[in-house]
Length: 280
Image 1: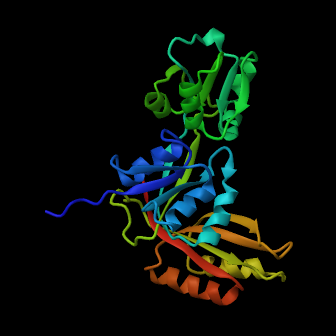
Image 2: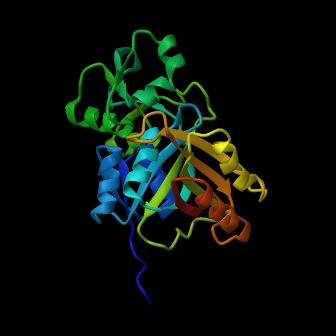
Image 3: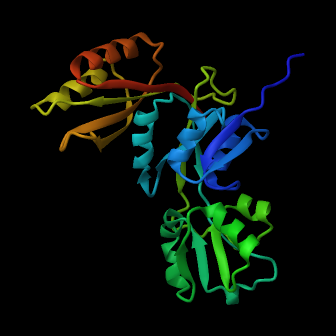
């Protein structure tokens, strides 16, 4: 019987970060975590074969797009092979024996702190203190034991680093989700992928009247449903832009093939970023 291959996943942050949860969802509970200090470090780990896969956040329902990762997708060129969404629920975590009344600082990633503004407004004695990572802030508490300190992170981070949960669901909006992309040099998609196919592309548009309209018509004329469009500055070309588009369909579909062929002929820069099935 052939042994099942073990995957490794690079992600930004420490074990217990929400990106780690996305990796487990995409690749299974046996995936080996490869923590990285930065998003660029995640891409470099995949490039250098220190990980078989990379998991990156691309969009949050409250905070919007993770623009840095759109730039990284173009720079490194790794194909998108999967997608999933993770419910983001923030917990106030302290080391065992710490009382809630003692907390004066709460460490976490700036995005996480920003998603808990109501909690901090209601508890003005607790100062939100930026840190490089949600799970990393719990790890720091376990290692350094700063007085009067807590962290805002996931339930998984509390379990990994031996923290106690003082309060649940700190986030202002319960419909807080982050969408993650799975990147890999491998062609085989994860077995957990069961959703309808999606495709992501990037293209430039000439600085001429109707250029973007003509590009969008490539999709509209084939009745392809666009699920997201994002624009980013084109490096080295002031006031020119790249457009990132997600739409329903696979590159194996004839209408998609015709749309992409027309788009490649219509635009000065064109790249297929990936065709993939989401993991619920």
